[in-house]
Image 1: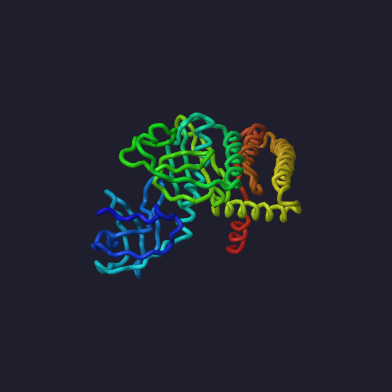
Image 2: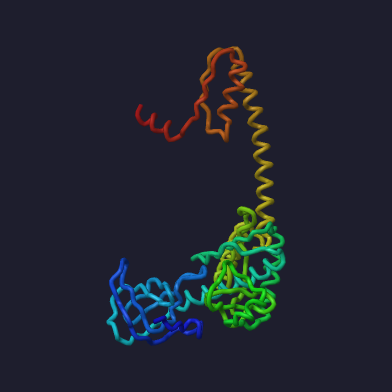
Length: 338
C-alpha cells in the first residue's frame, strides 16, 4: 500500500503522528515505513527531509513505487504509533530555494526560449544549467524582475490537471511523464511539472541573488541563492566591505574604489622600484667591468632580480658571474658558530 504523503497536503506541516508498518535493519541504520508521513523523500532535485520519529533520528528518506522509506538511526516497533517532527529550518530552506528556482527558471526560459537542463539544490548553493547563451547582464535583469515578483507576494497554485487539461497547458517539464502530473504554478512567472515542496506565496521566498555565471556546454551554468541563504550571503559581503572600508578609512560602499586606488599606487611604486633597481644593476656591472669571474652576495631581490643582476654583471666582467642572496638568519647562524 502506498504511503499517504502529508507533505503534499500541507507543505508547512511540521509535526504528525503515524503508525509503523515495517522496520528492518539495513546498511547505515533501519528502514522504517509508516502508514503516512510528512517527511519529503529525495526527488526532483530536492534533498530529503531530516528530523525525528519518536526517539529515532531520520537520516534520509526515499520513495519507490509510492512507498516512502525513512532511514533511521534506531529501530521502531512495528504497529506502534510514533510522533514525527520535521527539521523545519532545513525543509523551509529547501522550499525557498526550490520555489526561487522556479521563478527565475520560468522567467529565463520564457525570455530566452530555452530549457532548464540541469538543477541541483546543494547544501550551499542552487546550480542551474540552461541550454542558451545568456549574458551576465541579462541574468541580472531577470534577478531584478524575479525579486519584484517575489515582493508582489503572488499566491502559488499546485494541482493535478486532467489529461485533457494537461494537453492544453504550456507547462515546463524535464522529461516525458506518465500517470497523474502535479503542476506547480507561479502565476505570471512559471508553470512546471514538479514533485517538490513549495511556499504558499511568492513573498515567502524572500529574495533571490545570482552569485555565479559561467559558460557550460552549449549554454550557461548559474549559481543561485534564495531566502535566508541570500540574506546571509549579502550580510557577509557587507560585513567584509565594512571591514575593508574601516581599514582604508572609507565608507563600505567606497571600498572597491579605494582598493583600486591602492593597487594603482602599488603598481606605480613597483615600476619606480624597478627603475631604481635597473640603475643599481648598471652601476654594479660597471664596477665589475673586466674583473673576470665574479661572485656577488646581495640582499633579497624582488621577482627575477637575481637573474637580471647576474646577466648585467656577466655582460661586463669578462668571465662568469654567480649571485647569491644573503639570508639574515643563515648569516647569524654562521656567526654564532665562529
